[in-house]
Length: 91
Image: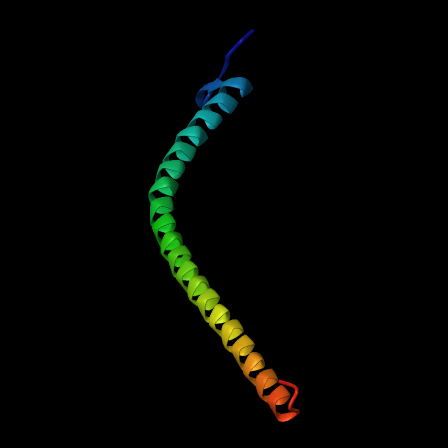
């Protein structure tokens, strides 16, 4: 099996070797890209953590406010019913 061919321009590798050369050069490019992606990913991770903590704080505040509204409404209902039944002289 011949791995190269000779012409006027010089030595040309076979198709298999040219494919392997192409893949190896692309693999080193992919390694570089994945390294830069990891560096960029840490910045993205820090930003998303900040957003997550802010969202968590807002949800906790909303839950406390919702609980406060529920307690206030139940207290107003008890007060209203108490006065209603006192007016009707049932209590």
